[in-house]
Length: 352
Image (cartoon, rainbow, N blue to C red; front, top):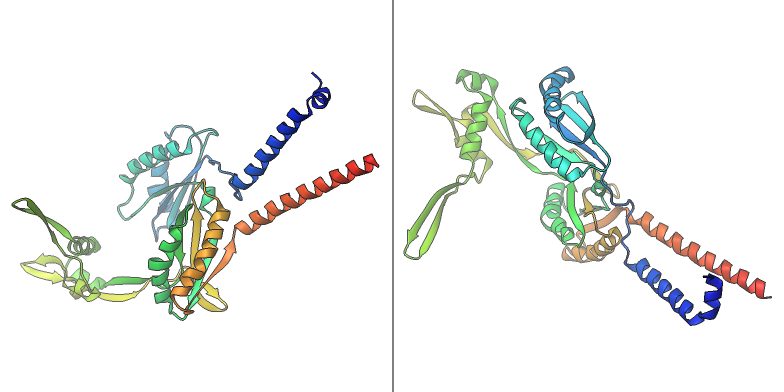
């Protein structure tokens, strides 16, 4: 069958077919998802074990080696690499291509949980993570204004962050910068030694006494009342009343062996707006979300949030990943129009 002959003999059918394809392409152009990177699973996972104050050689012996021994039996693993540095152990697991990385990560976490039994008790957390392209922030938003860093951090955590989390397609919003309250318990080593106590005794006492406890329930007719003991302290200095241990019938209070300080966490990152200190929010998208839609929604939300504070709060977008995406889409549009105009010009020149 000759395509040119069919096109000449059935012009209406061919025209309808071309119109349908054009409408399909037009609709797809406005409905297809756009992103800077395609959605794909990279078969690589990481195991991170922090142990502050330990030299690399000891990290290799008491942490890294024990983790390797357990995860060597993970299915579909292709190559395992480990790195030990001061205070941290990192293991990289490369899986075979085609491996379901989500299922592999579950198996890996189970092996890591087994390895934890042989690790030093001082290691609080061993994390297992995989490479996620969507972990990069779509937007970096800076907060500044007539507030100190403590109040800026509070506003960001309690008001601004929840507002951006409600945008469709947003998976997480991380707040960085500002000052966060931290209660520090500074142990006096000499006093600790004098009472023959250990750091573990202090940690156990604080964790045990500074918590709410369930006391059961009371049934009264058709009603059931739950009882709960409020054991958490309301003021940092109340921590000093915690009994660490009883020695010869005499209680040893935390205030006798330690100084309780109400301070702020150490600043790990700083951001500024026009030279003034600020707080930054990193907005991240879910795997199937459209970053352009998230950016548009965020830009509409920002003026509403600023209006709540009547000019005292300044919210601005520092970096917008969608700028490159928008420029790329616009370039495709421009090239399509240029190609169409050239084709028309060629057709007119042939007719003349």
